[in-house]
Image (cartoon, rainbow, N blue to C red; front, side, top):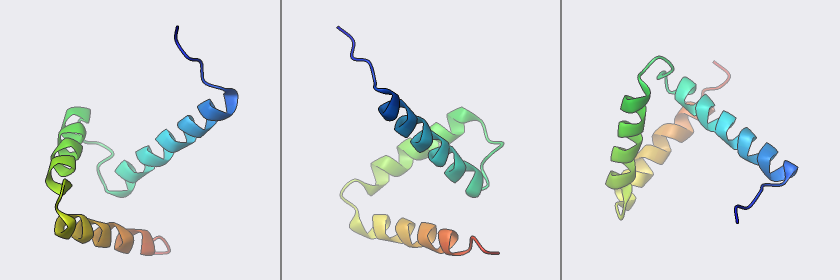
Length: 71
């Protein structure tokens, strides 16, 4: 039997997906092919597994980009 999401859960899920899409736009990748974007995300997911240094490096880059919202 399939579970149905509550209205609040659907709204939360939709909001999260919209926010994640906004990250693609913020990164300057709006017009890239979906296959490229998915491939890049899969590659990053593999590279950061157990690699605290790479995870920290990428987090720093992202934090800096969020800090530049006012520009």
